[in-house]
Image (cartoon, rainbow, N blue to C red):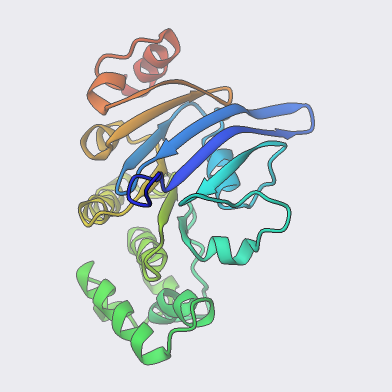
Length: 248
């Protein structure tokens, strides 16, 4: 398979259990370059656990995960090198409170990727300008609203040009009025060709921005396809019931 046609992410037969609770049950998923895949499912369906296994925050009990063709689940893999290739944003912004906004944005570029401060800050300021937060570059995170902090967290994840961007319920901790500005930024990131795997409950966003929607139930993929198929015309009873609850 040519590098151009190779999936950015290839999850094969992944199993993850916490004690007797099996959360992922032989899950298979491929994501192509520039594809945006949205995970839907009730709490406990395995969405966040899947994202955590991809970023090697959880060790697999079985299966393999490939990043751009490289098996990242071998025992001797350099975990830090793998994580340096993946951008991650969680529902809680996880900005360093003792660092100013620009330092938060440039930290990984400088410390992990070895970019010099001038180049990293130039890129960081360009990104902050794009989201209208250049005036906050020298502020500390506690001076920003929740929506602003989450947008900074997304920019921080983008600052190193990751191969894959993982977004885990990034709007769930926000006031409804702030959700839109964060999702608008994700739409912009999508338009620039990023490869994204995103867990969310925002059905409207999934309908308008996803290339593919994947519905999880009890650690298995029950249904997947284009948003207009999975959201507007679901075939599986469990998908229908979930969407009925969420939408009504």
